Length: 250
Image 1 (cartoon, rainbow, N blue to C red):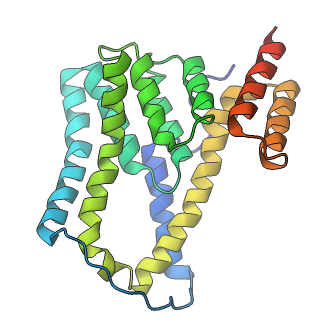
Image 2: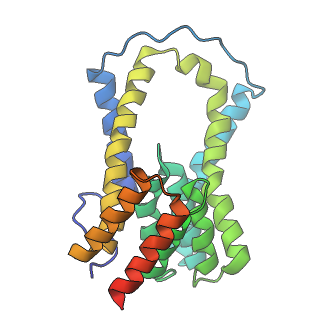
């Protein structure tokens, strides 16, 4: 069975994801020629520019401070929160992009077994809501100093904190930025790059950790058909896949 992170991606890390997003934005800025958008009514937000800048500074501060703190203290708890915050801060455009970052945070360090990681991911697909809530499961089952309800709630708060800070920081400047043609073409390129990142997340860790033979592939294909073609509710598809996996392992 391949180890966590195996699979041959060139940069299966936060740096690789950020690099892909930046490259997509630059290519979109230089190569795309989008039609002019329809005039939009301007909106005002009850957040000052000073408050926005402060929120952006608070967003960047943990990205620099937590890795240094974790390296200096050797604390597994600080390293855990560093990985969770980084995953919430550097993910753009789709919840499944967070999977490789979360796996790199908890599986190699031994905080969560890879089988438990994949089981939690499968269970997360059966319930509504953003995939970021998967962090609550990881915090709850973690073998570190913080676990259970406390660990789950703490991990949930940490992974959503960057999005809140970016939202508050961007709103005072959004009306001005979204009217610029260069920003629009760059965002289109970023969205295209995110599609590639989502495909890489499907490959590693999902495909590399779950598909090991023809039987596994057939089960995954059947589940995909039930979900996409048959429109079967996701919770039932998860139950079907779990029973199928149990039968294959028996």
